[in-house]
Image (cartoon, rainbow over all chains, first blue to last red; front, side):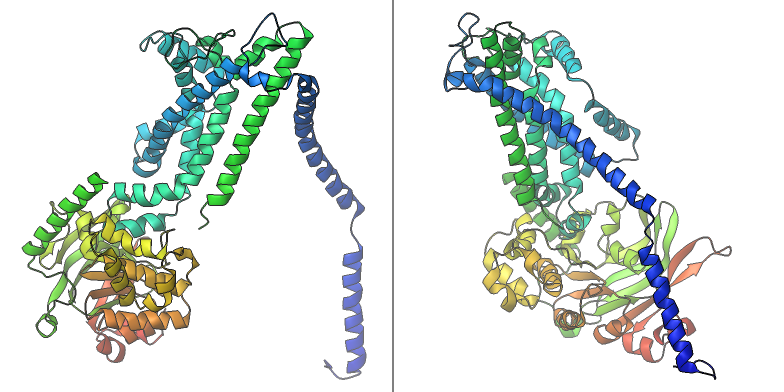
Length: 314
Length: 296
């Protein structure tokens, strides 16, 4: 392996010793400042997530400690009361919430999925109105819920629809509130279906509708379903817009969809109990929060499970 | 469902009318090979394609014969895939694409005003570069075409016939209900060919069907092409010259052409002849340079 004359073995030995020394120097020299900065950043990032988690944990423990004594089956079967906190429950509010989200699902699934299909599969993005719709939907998702309450009051309860302070009005208001979430999730699910599938279908002589109906939609359903569940869980937790469209805080009967007698919802009832000064009602409110959190966590977990289980990997 | 069926029904009627008008028998196996051998399927006269005004291929004139394997070869960017996609109007799906010139299929203008691209694609199937099975069972992949066309009678036989036709039956018969994604790449591509055959097209277009496959799978697909041309006319795009030499009867060589200031480039047909002649004794110097490997 000698290079030129003299003592080749000696030169080779020196060269490899030099290389070893260089490697050792580079590996051994980790600047202390880099190490410290690295650790500092990792610490900061960890702190960020801990702050977020701490809020949730504080809320949960507070609700559990306060609400645990009030937790019983009576909570689900008894009607509210302002006199007897020990007998008061959430029955009309729970039924009201279930009917509300039932109506929300009936509305957002066809409308949301339809809008998502239009925007992804049919809309020509070179046309200004399609781009306008797109920007609008992004913005709508960020509009505060109370604004939707005012919209519901002006256009659904009164105004053009004029259906009054009924449960259907609350349901429709919530549906409009969460519709952008469904559209955005639906679009993402549809966009995730690769173009090669559409091309393969069209190349067999399928129409665009057959391609959407039989290839794109089935492949996108897990993503769409996830979006629907997340939207519904948001609708379930909303109180503000409902207060404007007739969710009376005190209802002692089972509400129905079109009845003019008034209706209530779980978050509204919790709010009502929480504003009362008596300690017993505070416990009742905390118990209501536990019920709602359990339902929400169950729904969100189901959405995550659904996504992981059925999501198509391409 | 009923909507789909009625649509498929009218689709079939239109298809049958079109077939009558063009005086063609589209069912496989009904061809009179000795008489049909010289018959033209496609006639291209000055065909060009623009993408948003920029030419991709210019002035292509060629006849494609029935029951031949016709290969389109040429360097990258010469527009061979673009040309192939004109033949079953897949270019319609690309915004801004426009086709001009005359493109006749069994004498019918494919771009005539009354022609529905959906009907064109029922007659002229396509297999893509990357295998693109649907995320469904093997059976449902093959049955998709017949189902959307409303041909639901004897579906099992149709599926079996198509899988046999694509030399996949023996490997797939015990796992018809398994997801097609579980097949190997080569099997997936044969499944895509089976899916295409199941619609009973007249012509099959293949866009570099083996470029994502290993040599053994490639060999199987090449053998398959030689079998399939008994029933179908095949047009294949390939940048593998040996493949063109092995499977095709006629070969078209396309090249990239530049304008004077070298800003715009488009593909143009240099030479089109019997494959043997293209590879042994081409008329054009540029063809010779390309097939002998002097230029890529």
